[in-house]
Length: 433
Image (cartoon, rainbow, N blue to C red; front, side, top):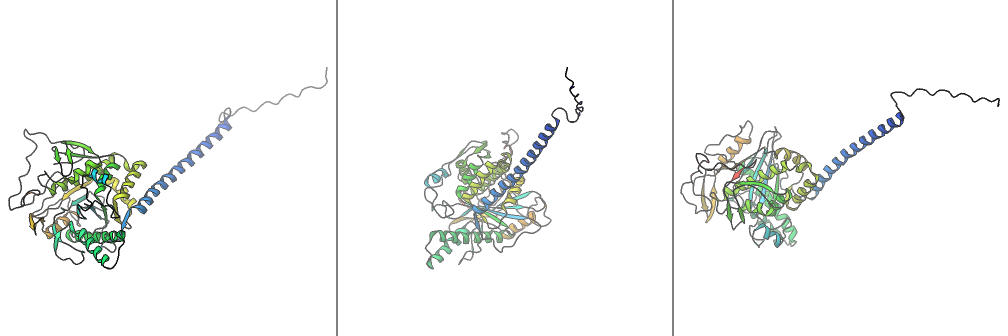
């Protein structure tokens, strides 16, 4: 028997309850997982910030910008006034004709000369600095006012004409000096048109304009398509061969082509152009409603599509912090905007053209009482009545779309009660005629 004896093994220390079997490896794995999650979270935050900045930088660098507001007076107390200008033009930002296929979809006539450069949509959006409800004032396009900033012109004309008159005059002056580049003529002519329209509206309303956004005729089309359709509501069915409008009564969602027909219709409407103004208000109300409901501001794909649409059709003033406004627009899209149509006194004629006769001082009081210091929510100026998208103003005279005379204004529509058909539910958007 061997003399060597095997050395007894020393007992192993007891396993710690806190570590458990494989505890050291498990703890290490948890630490690595935590670090990975933290790193991934940080990366996502950076990526989200980078994406937001990329979208903003892409929009700011690509969207058309203008110096038309350089040196202009600004609003006080944090308020912001934005003028939305819709051109009834069949041309793009470079003055090129829109493609025939697009014109056909727009149901806007085959010639790019139709419509000219009238600003058929003028809406002043007032956003209070204290966060209270925003107000949008529609300026009827045929208001007969003093034009400002139009070279060689003094006197009154329709407010929509300031842009086109100034543009044409400046282009003629440049051509007389030997400028032949059509893009330069278009660029400088449009800049003159913007300055004249902004100065005319600013003088007429008696308030500063801090920013503006201009879009062409195709803008309504592309905006509606980018949003995947815009909800609107009609009190009764309509059919108009001029604009292409052919819609049933009730709430419905319009695509790009239908949206343009909706905002352009005036034939067959009791108040003609004034009813068309309410269509424009209803379209914007529906678009902001869709922006909020569709989550556009939180969906990068939808936001990029909207930005791409803006780059095609929109011109804004240089230096406008669009990222801040996009954030603000998210709040406005909750329906926190009141639409008002500026009142007119009566209808009339000037050199055979139909016009809206307005009282300049009454208009200034009308605006000041709503957005001036200490203004109440919705007081009425003497003789003026505010109008929402579904409540027409009460001008004196005949209705637009019919021969204008001294005949009394049409009686208001009967109330939808007392045995008549119930009012149509717009589902969050205003119902219009």
